[in-house]
Length: 437
Image (tube, rainbow, N blue to C red; front, side, top):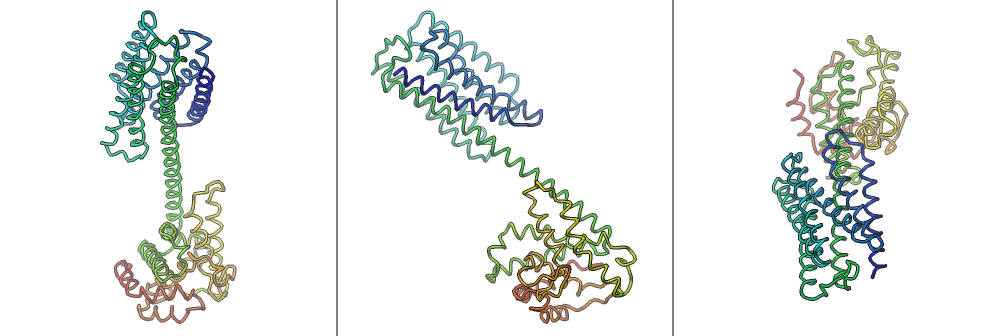
């Protein structure tokens, strides 16, 4: 039985050291570190406890006293941690916790001097059950505050089972086992099993708390990545609008067109695997950057009132390749989550490619053209036709529709044109609602 005890406590020690190393490897803000101080402290105290239980059979009562009091300190720190999840643990919480630990220590040393091993087991079971009850209350208050982390409810169930197991261990020792134990390590198989289960439940609590923090860290990093990407996109969009003569309403219209075209394509059964809700959302966010390459076009060409000559048109055509290069330069190589920027690169570089291969800058053909660029090409073309420009008059909705249908299979993906035909009325509505003043 002693070998089984030592093997179990050593295994528990290894697990706790691993969790402790993971918690110490995090790099959080000063406020977060202050709040999370109780977590590595609890892991450290629990690791000390398991180490002392491991060597307890050699070290005697003094080592077991350290083991038990470290265990009490560890579970109290977990309770403070749960309290801090509702807000910073206040001074009264810390004072009450310190008093509870001192009282527990005095009671333990009293029974160490005057009581039996069974008395100390009863005491520890009572203290730890009360600590678990406190933790259940703190977790219940978190649920009441509508904290949606699923780990909270799991922790509540584990803590309730922990209380039950400790009560069962005390009842078993009182009525069914030999209460004249000479040592903790002399418990029979049932007593040992109940003790092992209680420690395993405590380890489960530690693992789930670690999972909670890892998931929180992942959500934080994902949120930060999205915020950085959003800020970058807004900055690039602002840069594009400074140089382009298109209006803000043009951006609103083309975003609406792209969204509806993509959804209609999916409804018609085309490119279903490529048109998830997230993929469509990326296209909509990337659409405003389709002409960002115009930042590199000289003013005398970009803002010319009238038709461009052949040489000027050749320069204007370079804006697609320029836009792709600008966005690739803006995308950090290690930014794996910048999906919107990837779509923006496809759109900027390829929205002037034609289905029959006659477009620019690379003469791509058919499905070699990125889907987002094929959708953007039609949306941009429709908006250009029905909008008045210094170099052209406004076309009617019917004329624009006829022009797009005539270019089915030539300039535009036939499937995208089919989606457009289904959404003609919507396009007309959007063009009217967000028309340029």
